[in-house]
Image 1 (cartoon, rainbow, N blue to C red):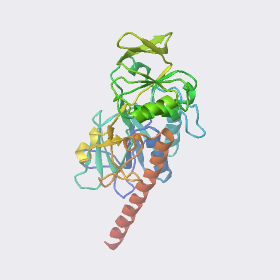
Image 2: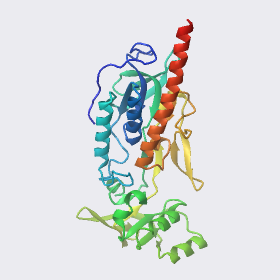
Image 3: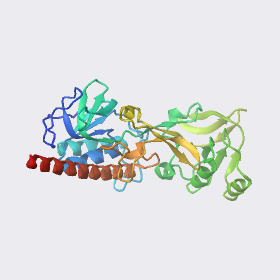
Image 4: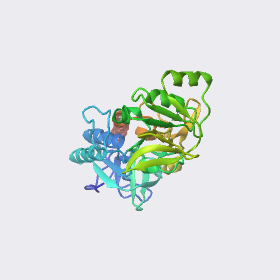
Length: 340
């Protein structure tokens, strides 16, 4: 991503563009992460005439996907194109974007905001933080899955189901959600195979459901994928058998990109589905507020199952809450100054 950082900003709370902890610049809001959630939130804040800096490591979760779906008006648009458009919109309203990673965040010594430390060593001060760093998908350790992730190795049917409709689709079982996945993907294809792999054996009721929907069940561990002319053609089992498949569905683990928040005492919580731990996330209320005052979260870092459109909406909602909080702070400062 381009470094589109502009001129120095001014703290609209009345202070100069300086912060404690060695930080030389202070913004109303620093947004950590420049995906759909971060850019949507940043644009909303910039339109509210807040000074905003987006720090983006340039590692969007959906980078392997060639197109995105389920975003009204943007169906089939490459993810990179959406983000480029968002950065242009932000800078048009005076917001700034810099490509870098954040390695630490802590409160300023005066308690009036935060200091964010970038990987390049540059500290930045902010009155509020919006964390939209997303997550990392942890794939099952089967050779070939990672190389085809986002192409024929898939997770979300609402993102990719239409594209593989009527093709043979394999579901790789690694936990208790596999049967649910197989029955769900059956909506998009009549040719579904559930590979038992390392997952638990289905119950009698689940076997009946799978049979009723025409879902084949294959025992044995999966050892790899067969690829011909750069296209997935089959799933290989430990005994050497290859079962035809043009797409493979997996249940990845979701690991929130949140280690840098440790200095604020904000740790990632366990995310669960069907009583199974599927990853981690940063807990936040419906408006995005975390348990640390002044820090909000939006997008996949706070909602691992959220789609792109949901992440964008969450960013806008969190931005509105942040601006309301800043307005209260501005009013209190003004009243205190008037009384003085």
